[in-house]
Structure formats: structure tokens, C-alpha cells
Amino acid sequence: MDDLDLFSLRDLFNRNRILLCFNGPISRSLIEEIGHALKNYLQAQNATPSAAMDVFGVYIEMTQNIRHYAAHRQYGEEDSAATIIVARQPDGAYLVQAGNLVEADDGPLLMARIKALSGMDKAELKSAYKEQLRKPRDTALSSGAGLGLLDIARKACQPLSASVGPASGGKVFFSLRAVI
View 1 (cartoon, rainbow, N blue to C red):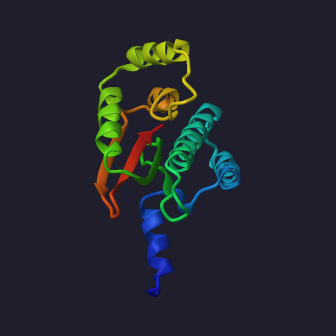
View 2 (cartoon, rainbow, N blue to C red; view 1 turned 45 degrees about the horizontal axis):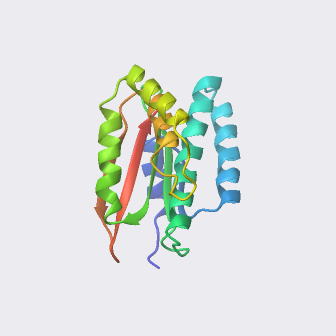
View 3 (cartoon, rainbow, N blue to C red; view 1 turned 90 degrees about the vertical axis):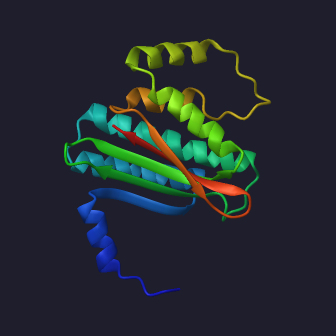
């Protein structure tokens, strides 16, 4: 492993107002522990209770989506890794961004879903959320890009954005960004 310049990494985090950063395999217990740390940090930063709940909810939804996707695809530890960042923007909004490896065929589908959601206003998102709630749940299907993604879009103060980048082994790296 190369020598890491931790001071430079710390400086990068500080300049970008990164409150929390995680990179690696993510389990249910780790999601919980990081979630507790995030709640405590937001409380220490005097975040409003509604902002803290929204940031926490978006973090939980994003990380659970990654975990469920990796389990559904039966990914091993390396391929099921996640990269998660929570940052405070200069205007006071919070940025929650998470990324993970996905199958190359799933990348365009996810991007299309994000594009559709980012084109909706708050009323359309609310309507789509209620419609999704009324739909019967098919337990045989993967539970991705549905109610949780709509919930993230509803909590965001800006349209969701996403990117897909090349990776190896027939996979791409999908990254989702929400500003709360």
C-alpha cells in the first residue's frame, strides 16, 4: 500500500465540509453504527431536528439500497463495498452521496429512474410516492428503485443527480447524490 498523506486527506475533507466518509463492505450492524454516529454529529452541529431526520433517513435508505442490491446479486465482500459521504454545504444544506458497484446492464436503468425523478416537482413526487404505496408488493422481484428512492427524492431540496462510471468485471460504479 502506498503511504497515505492523512493530513492532506484531512484537509480535503475539511475544505469539502465532509462530516462523514466511509468506504468498504457494509453490513446491517455497520449501517446502524454509522447512523448513530451521524445522528450524534448532526446533533452536535445543532442541525434542526427535521434536517437531522431527513439526512439520517436518506443515509439509511441509500445504504440499505446498496446492501440489498449486493445481497440480491450475491456479491462477495469486495463487490458489495460502498462509498458514502455526508457533507455540509456552504449554504447550510447537507449532501448525502453514496456509490457502489452495479451490473453494467443496471446502470442505464438506474440513470433513467433518477432522470425521471429529477424531472418531477414536489407535488408529482408526492403523487408518485402515494401511487407506489398502493401498489401490491411482489416479493419475488428485487425491491430496488421504488418507494425508498421516491422518499429520497421527496426529502431532497434539489433534484437528485447520479453518475455511472466504468469498473471492471462487467460492472459499473453507480453514484447517487441528494442535497437535503
